[in-house]
Length: 124
Length: 124
Image (cartoon, rainbow over the protein chains, first blue to last red):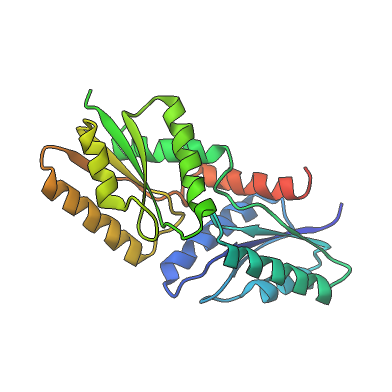
């Protein structure tokens, strides 16, 4: 099977604690051992940005990189930036496959996440 | 049991399709019938904003309003705005309980949402 990397992409913040959420998620996903590497990256305001993050995946031997937007509902601007980053990575590494995943918001499980957050707030 | 409303709070966008995500979620939650009312609201750029949204919940008879941030990881600015909106609603409606829920990002199920989005991108 092609060695596959997971490139997580968040907006990025100047606040370390906001970026820490992505590091936490990356650590949890690494523990599952499903991917060659799980690499956080950021649209802006934090390092690495998306293209350098993708190149770190290539450098460790990924033949395929899933680019995962850690966004509920990315705006048009974000979608354009992600697509441009994917195209740039594909141009630089034609032997590697770069696949852009869907954002998270409309996944059916989100309904359960919201419901459980609401119940927890009520102590239920 | 106290009639409880769910006030969903998203950032808000000038793009109708971004706000449509919250309407979609609200419709799904309404179909479950767990809350007296499920009301979308927005921090900015779309209507209703948070305080008017909360007052719509009170107007239909809610004795308790769960304010649910539809954010993965709200920045400090967002947290301050949500807290200020809750305090303002509590000041205007002292007989109603307003409870601010946790944002979505660190919920354990998010790991599964991310994993499934990545697999779907690979056609798995």
